[in-house]
Length: 317
Length: 281
Image (cartoon, rainbow over all chains, first blue to last red; front, side, top):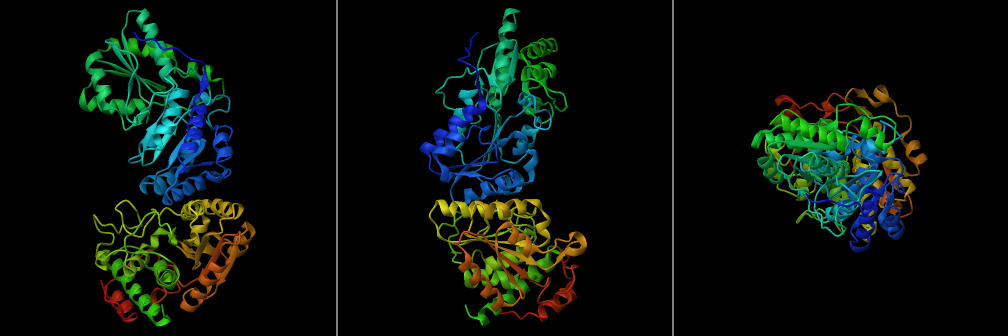
């Protein structure tokens, strides 16, 4: 089985900041807006280098989404930055009408998604944002897995004409994808080849899935790990090709089991090739305060939980 | 355009509004009629804009955003009469597969519409973005908006108002249609807003109050004054005091025609008060 090396822990939000900085240098139409979280979103470099193209809107996310929509009319490519909760639930109608329905080329960039926000607790730990965004017609939804991939995805979405939701996080996590890999929207990454079970993971859970695959290999189980950074449009071909081979699927995500990646995968499987599926996801609850690692363990979102789900789904074949 | 020619447009636009709403027995005639003189003056006398070969980016043009999207009948009539699309398309208003949706939208490419509106309170933010883009593009044309007074109850309007003043968005002219009415009654009954002028001034806007918002000469004077006030470090607000239902006597002085269509007899009555000047669609 192919092994991956962590080149050193890094936060995905810094990948966003680095990608945005690079975009600022090479694409003069890229502009950025932030609702009083410039440091948290790692947008300082872009703001410092492009003061005329950076809009500090204050704590007014609804206004930020509208301004972003308006900027596209003059040919700009706006990247909005705030926490995932304030990027989605708080401004759902603004995104729905002024951005999605109006077909505006806005990149909604959301940090601190999921439980790994940690100690701030449930008010800030949104676990419903993937669902909210994927329900909007034509919205692209991307949840990259590490620093390198977040940086690459940030750069890639500037070349795509249409609304995008880019979701990333706060904690330092393993950085294991190739630094110069080009990000392709809607394309899954088959990270390991396997024959007994398919593990489809997104965001921070991709590294956990790789750890789980190693543990499963030690137990004599061959797991195929697929990194699914793009949740919409979903790479159905990759899912089905793997499901034909392994005959069962585990999905893993830092999100409510309702509305997330698992649900989208299930829709693909049930309509095209029904096989057993297990969901590693938050079981319809809010989060709470704690360290990221404590929370991921308590809510069953780590490698151990993926191993257990894999064993269970294999037994259901 | 001469006062006489503008008046001819006004009469025809009023006919278009009541005929569109009557044809599908739905839509919002009251607020539409109240804004006819303003939008006629803006589109036929004031703004620099290019109805033929509509371009979304509007670079080099003045832009207008309708924030209170429910007055779509007046918007569609103005756009069609200005030449954005054929007047015959008004016959499709609110019908299945139409580009003239109940509330304006961009998704079928209707010329003259740059943003969807309907859910209230969002237009000023969008206009600020368009105004910021104009500044970045070195484009010295202006951005106009229209809002209902009831719409000011939406919090996002004040987020936008605060931003526009703080960031000196002085290429923005936002007009509020102060007809003092909303669906459930008068604005004072539903949620009294106190002095709208004092609020905008406190937020840092240059405010122009127009007592006779249905008088073409008053509207023209106000728009000229607003344009002269632009570019001086402050956003500009026009408080346009209008009569809901203006030009159709039985629709005036009440909030009852906010979202109600006239029947056959009422349509005939309304049309008899507004002569056909440019040809019905």
